[in-house]
Image 1 (cartoon, rainbow, N blue to C red):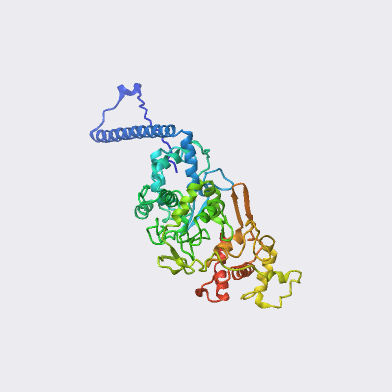
Image 2: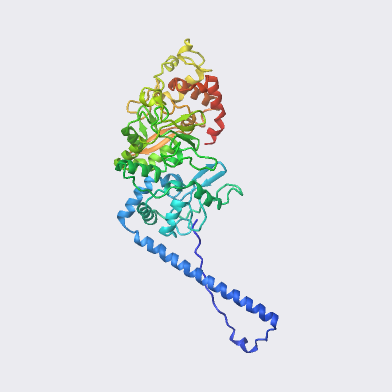
Length: 509
């Protein structure tokens, strides 16, 4: 929130008619009068100083705006705003751009993104460049209150002075002001108190503005800066601790970019681990995925990652996307183990020298069981149960696939040749031990803009019962993600129970 501008002024009202008739004050009243006069005088000085300070602040705001009113600087700021993915968090579908209002669930309650337009009452139009820098790097608003760490200031602390100045120029001169009021958080007292956030920032936000490593290449340095800083990739892809802090902020720290849960989706492992991360991806693969959200035969962006592609990555230069790929291929591999996603560094993994190791990108094969159902009455089961796969109740899943999925993804699950409708085998979502993204894609659909065309998958939240969702997911995982389940998942019945246990979380997202 921007502090309200207060106007201070004093006016002496002297009653000339009463001067000659003023009574003589007794000692007690005289003492009291002196005290009151002293207080009044001090208050007048404070109000005068306050007014002077506000005038000086207003002049500094205007000076900073004037100094940054440069088309080239504004254009650079727009690029950095896209690289920082500001629109994804500070805009809503039915609201003004950058006017805030988007809700974020936290372990202690829901909070809402703020208005970052240059509106002087509800936005940040009264921010000086210094205050703007402080809110980005330290999470402290101009009026002194501390932001919750849903705002990625631990990553933005990496931003250089030049890039912050460019962002300020864009923010003040290119963004349309909006009078949309900020929404209060729904965090209950006393957890909603802001002052502990200053301590949080001191403990959990240690990064300094970026400086190049002279021993690394230009691409590595640029990629590290974009990933650690404006891109704030760790905000989603690194696990958080009990204080909602990212457990690692750079590749030198254990578990960095090893994967985490975010808004009901799994933000996958971005490290070069062969089994769970991007070890089987080339630098060009990473670049293609970031630019389009689609890597044929491996992965497609949905949910929060679709927003990142739409609002951020597709607008970035080829050089910057290549630099990001160079950096991601260089960081220590992290092996994601277990259903809870506990991540530990595993530098000695044998799979590093075995490119044929099973990954979440190479599971499954084309299906032929759906073909058996075509033209058959709905109550007739196929004779050959082996073709169905090892399912607790296969037939409902097969029929659900035929009715809801086969039209776009094909009877065999191979999708379309151009990859617009992706293959369901050799697919990151069906091949993952984490079922969350598969459920979210089915329930909420997928939609993203992609440089000239739209990608769309309908949502089935209203058309599938809980049992139908479990049956469909059970079929998809076992038919197209065949072999991905670890020994810890034991049997199909165990997996079905795991899916059932997560229904409530998936439905609320």
